[in-house]
Image 1 (cartoon, rainbow, N blue to C red):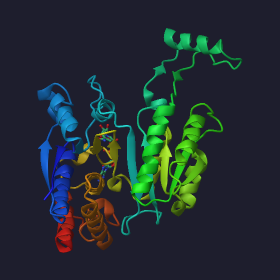
Image 2 (image 1 turned 180 degrees about the vertical axis):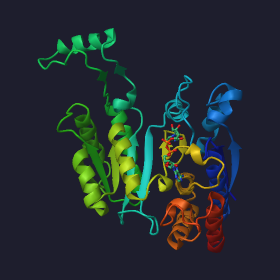
Image 3 (image 1 turned 90 degrees about the vertical axis):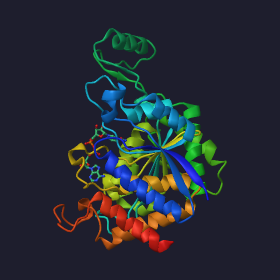
Length: 367
Ligand code: NAD
């Protein structure tokens, strides 16, 4: 019997109730393979901020460094407190360079699309999100403009704000290699490199040239090159054509919301942030604080993030059984949360905990 030690972070807002539902479902799924969890429960978010003086206590970070695997509920980003987002801090501190977001339509989920089964692999550390910016009118911005205007004929207008877009060869290779390896390990046939290299030759162009090199190491995976604008159109016109998409940070952020919308929205969109030796699993959505404590919101996204975690831990069979149980409960449409019912006021909707119970019952039957 394998016991997996995992850091469990309930988060805040609706995080704790989503996490509790997910914990119970994960234990039931692992049990179908004779495995179990040894949870190291750690706090982060606005609820712990007052007593700990920080929304990300050092012991929470230390726990993830030790266990190397965490699953977390959503966390509110406190506004106007001087604290940075816990989610951003975790990614930076643990160098979680890959953001993985599989988006798949499950029959029964309300969506305008069917046959969507794409995986977004987003670079998490570079690009316009590197945080290198100069506010318009400041001496720093003016200095950057003067310097750049001295380098070329094309002139930047005075009074411009400047955001820098760094894309490195090493950062590109790391994420692109991850995407190809993911495709190989998960029986996928294609990796699409999404970029705008016709316009940004030295950043997106570099990303594309690294893609062409890395693709040579994966002869069984078909490499596709797609411009980001054409990708937006192609995804909604022919969703079935797309497979694993690797993207620089900004395009990845935007397209992962697009594909989440195509499969039924935030309530069903799972995610993972992966580093060289550490991984943090979490839903795409935020803490939905207006529903806090109401046993109302949909835990599917966090439960499916847990499915990704099971696969990461080598529990592929349990992961597959969990996904099948979730799909079966959604397809039946009886014991689902309000957002998965035909109308949002449907009186037959069940709560977060009861939806988890229905999945656990299916897992029991699958044993
Ligand atoms: P949100 O995702 O919390 O909510 C957006 C909308 O989606 C709301 O209408 C909400 O009710 C609904 N929704 C979200 N999750 C749902 C679920 N599981 N089931 C049913 N409906 C659901 O986004 P927001 O309101 O912009 O952000 C709230 C807080 O969460 C902010 O402080 C934000 O910074 C934070 N946030 C955290 C994370 C994270 O922890 N990874 C991610 C995004 C936002």
